[in-house]
Length: 420
Image (cartoon, rainbow, N blue to C red; front, side, top):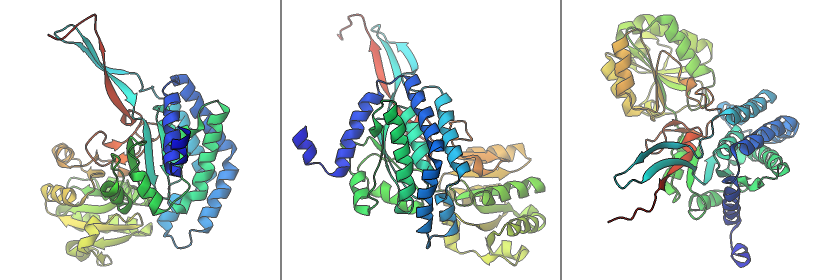
């Protein structure tokens, strides 16, 4: 083993340490894992000054980044407290490991069960969202998985500070600190090496913009769970109530425009567009939102910037929203399914049948009737935190909590059976 270790790259050494930590994690009880989560939460709050100082270093270097990106990068005392609270909530969740989904007896008299087990070692490649370091560590630890994190260079000092605090808390409890590891090298070469680390990583999860996600999906040799990109729509149906349409659209766009569950597009039925669109547009403009409209939308609100074909597929992560007027719900559904990223879509309507048709025909991980897309979030769904929002259909879809970080194995009880 010693000679083998000498020849390993730094990333391979980390993978080897993660595998060793995974073995210890499998032996920890749910109470021990919960104790670790509580200790990590307390450590985050206790060392918040150190984390904020590191974050200031990253912010000082963020001079050429757009405001929405800086917002994702920025930590405050309240945001650190939220991270810690997320860990405490994860500790309160039911333990998924060891639970048996179902059990049955076959014709040979064997008792066959399907039991939940950890995925193993999870790799996460993410951009300027330092809260991912804490959220991902919490969910992976609770579900018995070791984690290797690789953040972007924009948040490197903050990520180092957070991971050091978490590792220190685990070490004080006598738990292998390598259950949580951060890759300090933010180069593309190391990212590419991580994507090929099939000997050590069981799954790779990218979190960030569409460019990052597609690079991981197309490059990685490690199995990937695709997450994140959010070209989300609000459809204002002809039976929508105006004030509700205003409130939900403004919230979905403005409350935090830099995140993947923020609405990027407004689709509105022509039967109410003349009356509703000026009111909704004015409310958005009051919040600093730039609107980009198709020809019909601009005929109603001439101050809109002309929308291009590229706008319908763009995830702005900014105070920008494109607007399209349609003549039917079928047209709205077709447009949304043609341009969305399978993340979160919402209809505003008082018509039950229209709402149900939208629910059934929209292809997305989360579909809402009369609510903001901003609720697509593991914390809001009661998961404590989330590892990401899966926009694919295999293994996991939507906000990924503890259950989605497990696999299954079959356990079989016999009393001497042999197959004839």
